[in-house]
Image (tube, helix red, strand yellow):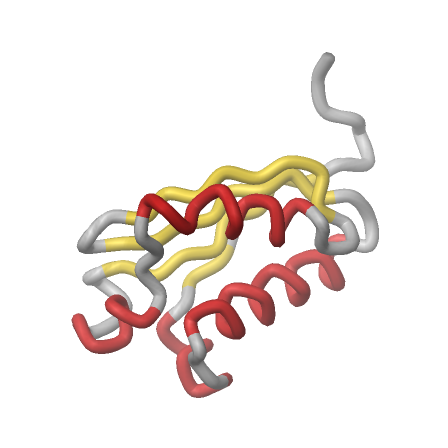
Length: 97
């Protein structure tokens, strides 16, 4: 196994360093929802693999993406904002790499 040369690793998250508690609460996912969230992200175009980490201080999604990378990144961001019931104003609190 292993990553293809055309795959890219991606991280999107929010933490106590980037957002106040009111914002983090909206983007925090309970354990009983993680399976559903993983399935939803995995079904997005361009997503090969993904992992969700959600604690009281941060929520991060790690994913391996296929090309086109930017579209896959945008899909993940839109999906988690939709899951959280959060609008685009939350995007300024999100970090990506």
